Length: 146
Image (cartoon, rainbow, N blue to C red; front, side, top):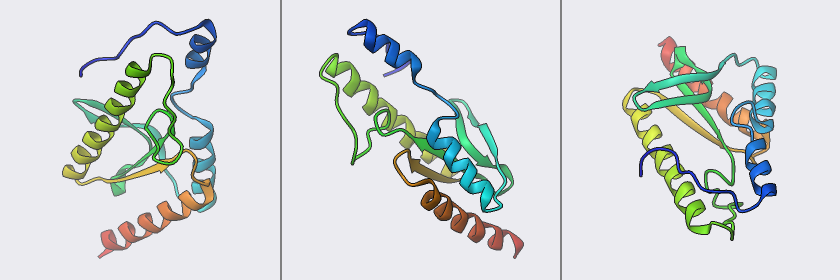
């Protein structure tokens, strides 16, 4: 599958809901950034990490080559919280499966380029996710200093 899938919304309410979904600086991303900052971890936001195909990390530490993606449960098919809409079911299943394939492709490309990829589910408590990230960052920093 290539390009963006387009489908007519099932209702005006569905259209409004989809238009209101934030694509960056979501509540989960903001909460995670606050926790990382409180732990003394500095980062950049919305960092292009691949150019072809274009991929943008939600949070990145370029010097350590760490890319962090905060994945929404619906859009990325969370194994715990994913829901499958009844309206336009085939479209949504294809869309979410394609998102997951894109995520896997992004992970593979970044790993080949020497990046550490960290994926955080939007439902994860931000303090726990930040501690997990801090542990990885600390390990990478200690390796870099050797």
